Image (tube, rainbow, N blue to C red; front, side, top):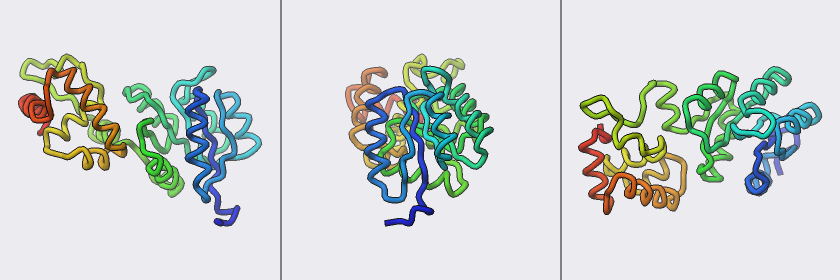
Length: 221
């Protein structure tokens, strides 16, 4: 057992009781992590912070009493040396850049594999940033995954989410489901499920046709 002084004290914040239950299971399986609280609201989280001084706060963007961004700012102001890791379903630019502006150390999406979430916690505690690959591209390159057609309109009339556009781009490059899953830190079953939705949205019957449509649209560039 890792000595108690070396434990990473983690506070989880999410408005969904089922999500919190799942987080408890993942975090409590790691002997190097001490779960100091699991809260449904930002107010509860701030109370736990005042008592337990967590090293990492994992939060959703959307909370019932405040935003995760507001919680991040308050936690950073009160505790200073704490890392805030966003675990969220939100991948819009407002949420992403708002979180980074509030001092977040990481921003990952909820389809992340459990082992990669644990890795993200360790990464931010080492003083490094942890961003989903697609989000990192937007932050550092300021480029959208969704390409534009010759008339300046967004491909597929913006039917695809950012995550779906990333997966389609990898399909166009010839990546296998396993390679896509490893690159995007998700499971192969998640990739397969997303692909079915993508095929429906773009009118493709199979992977080959989807790749052809994507290549014509510039996704493989």
